Amino acid sequence: MSFVVVAKFQVKSDKNQEFKELITKTAEQSWLEAGLVKYILVEDPTQPNLFTLVEFFATESDFQAHRESAHLAKFREQVSDLLATAPEVVRGIPTLANRNSKADI
Image 1 (tube, rainbow, N blue to C red):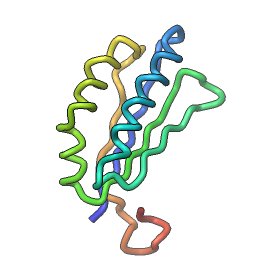
Image 2: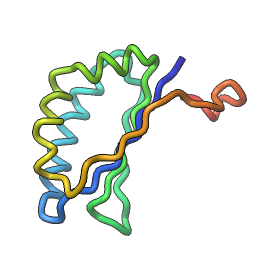
Image 3: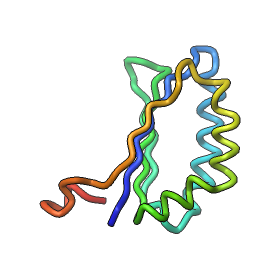
């Protein structure tokens, strides 16, 4: 069963470029994980310091392995100084996945 994580990051206005560099490094390492199906970063064009990260994993166990990875620990350690507020994170399984293939990864 697939597993999805959505995280919203409100970045301090003067830390936008640093955030992009940090999340790019983290993405490059995350893309190497076998259980990561898709990793998408969305930048809101109307709010240039608001980023939404959507990660799709093959299983919840793959997500747990990602959470315990060294590169994610490093990201968590470094990102806090760049954020205006704590990230908003939602985790779970695609609820409509069994109804239509477009509702799953």
